[in-house]
Length: 448
Ligand code: IFM
Image (tube, rainbow, N blue to C red):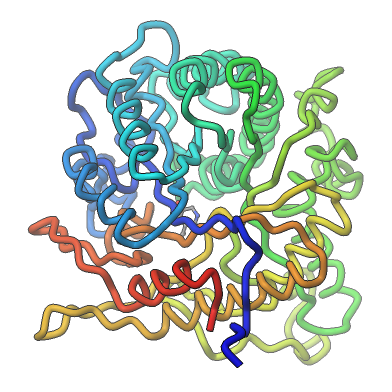
């Protein structure tokens, strides 16, 4: 009777994730160059409450304490990103040794603590110098990314095995260049499409370089994926769901596995796709060892092409459990997504590189932070992960988002996703109850 309800496979990777701009601070220290997020957050009106990542969790100075916390949590893996402008302040060319040294020391310490590093090369902090030349809309950025990937994998590849080229290229391209809510804050679909293509091309060009520098590398890319459910049976809602799937999911998944850009989206975007050159799709579909999925919620697609009155009544209704991001809690969407990645797209391995939830957290009079909603969110997503594994999907690891509260982009510090609470005034770290529970999960390799 002591058999655990959800026992995970031996060797399952238990981690947590962060990103450089969200935690490091030290935005202009020790030779670091300006990033598009430095510029964006310093521009009045771009980030809620005028917050910036100038200090954030001050991880640049607290990194040893933070690594000790990771050890205490019992994680066997830590996913973090390198800030490109910290190591190449102008994006290419002259190297900032102090920046390289920071990551090198971190890797050494992680390995000493027996924590496997998973490095994300690009988690949105493009050097501003490259943005001044057009950023991701310019094809020249691809060579710069390859130079950067080469530098980092040459420097750390003797010790780091796990590499993620890009985090959520959809967000970089479409939220940054079409919706304007992220750096660089543009609102031009054509730019977003070009950015998206150059991001994918950068991935395709970087993978062989990483493999050359690190022959036993485990290399992949991380996508934000969200299953689309038509709000009703109406033709219009079904079309909206197909379009939404093309926009967020298939536009990235299809080219990565060699299917090219989805024809329905190409038809929709038309001449806007003129920047795709011969051979690009071949480059993009370079084989990867895994795909990383960041899953938070599903999308219920309601057509904007017909009025609510003309449309069929909604049959798929958003649940009433909603996070602080206004995202519906829908764990089954993770099961569905994992299955699709394996059964439809045939990825050899899958990591959940992010999953978690923002809720309002209070530090109690006793100094404790009790966060049952987050604990329950993670628990139910782990149950769905386990279900996927039981169905034969090769899910190799789970990284909670996030290790600690941090700068949540356009929302500044107003949303807390951490397992560890951060008091931004004092930089005091406190394990929330979800962290203590996660500690037990890792210890037992099971969700009880
Ligand atoms: O904080 C972000 C992260 O940087 C990328 N994925 C989604 C998270 C929550 O919004």
